[in-house]
Length: 308
Image (cartoon, rainbow, N blue to C red; front, side, top):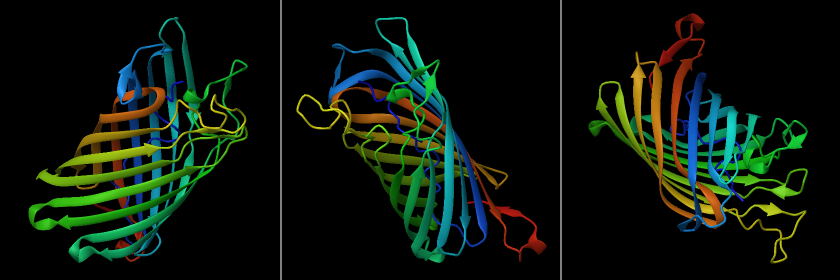
């Protein structure tokens, strides 16, 4: 019944999504903790016939991006669930999974890149793939889908990114729009497709400190179980699919002008869940990012860094 509020890799350091300069490498690592303790049925809380007391996950991710040309950047990211946990309400029982999540290989192209005017419009396409197409089994028992670390299926992603900077007032506005499509797994089960739309406002507070405010809308379609029919006689999983609106304040600090450390807090403001599902209460994350200039013309090939 519960979707455990995550499928595949949760979004990490989403601020760093634009194209890179030629021969520049970006490394991003992040950790996210998420906690859920409330069931929703449509747009209201419910406690009737619920199974779980709470659910949570702890996830670490790593992404590497490289600028092939001024406009073309490639990126690969992957992650690991230390745990995806469910605690049941009326019995003293816990179920837990862990392991590698899906990975993504993406290509991004800067359709409009004007550094002098601080304008960028970038499109991207990615292929998501599981490290295993088989569901996780512990002690001879196959874990339920809500605590599986991976979708065990392939998928594709499309992205649009727009950025506009206002250097005179140290303000930056940008938006990220992403659509994830999931294919069917070995068991003829298909996770719902997800559309994410985010608007960010970034403002310099003092030297090396930046405040960021993100407004994020998430829409997920129903899962499909083609091996089983619901009571209406079709493949839709009734207790799946949602609309979620989240506000995410963030604080970023540039360490020695080289490392960017960001703290993130996600707070859902509006939830609409189809059927009856466990929903997120909050999540917190921390990310660390650094850019490396690998151009041969820089100091005879020596690696140098820059602040973004």
